[in-house]
Image 1 (spheres, rainbow, N blue to C red):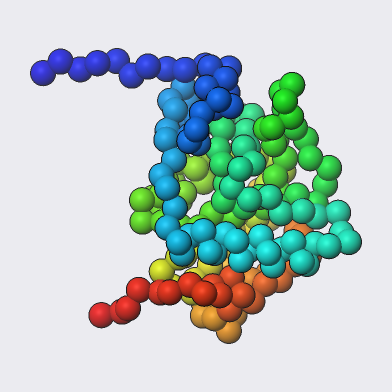
Image 2: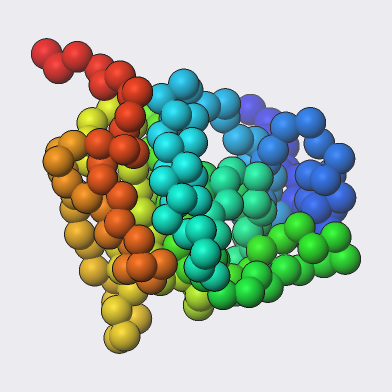
Length: 193
């Protein structure tokens, strides 16, 4: 059986193609990975988070950016699109188009069946190399469950779980808190067997 070599792209080739592309893709080690479409629940959760954070950030230096903000992890060379990025400092942008963010402080990913392993594995390994990143938040879409990883002064990551609609997610680096009931507003969970 013949095997064909995988085409490797430079970061410049990726960015040139991505800026002209109709659909988004991410870049890891020379490979371009197409992004899957999102479900209604996924989009609703992201929208709810952006709405809640936007309201809380009014009058502060913080801002929440959704889905379209490309992030570069300079240490690994990866380019990714987190579901939500939080910034409380001035943005550091790369390139002549200023469309690549270098310094996210909080990254939020809404887990999908098709992306959960990637978000917990390869993407998380890359995110940990971001010196600016203080919190990594994983939001389940099939139950009221959020996992929040916080960078400690030692560089280690501490996990805190938020379970149930009566819980409130704390985002300490942005001085924000959001009830899970607001994050999951209008989200239909699958029936349990």
